[in-house]
Image (cartoon, rainbow, N blue to C red; front, side):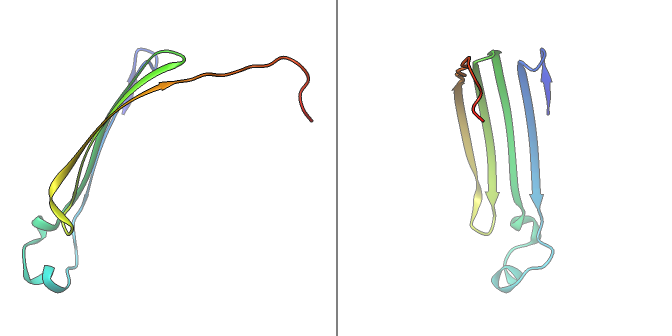
Length: 93
């Protein structure tokens, strides 16, 4: 991950693999280890052009081989508005 333009644009990417070391039951008889690898990957891009407004795009690809052999793809676009209310006066003790 990293940032560009004084933290206005932030990016991040990761990928995780889980390879089975020991297999039991039907999995031991059917298929090979490569067919049973789980993958969890994601990439995100965040843009905050002004202090109170942010746009974030997140993409993920997930494969849980024991449950479903196909990749599940997810796309998200989020818009965040931030409001802060500052009051003057005595602090509460």
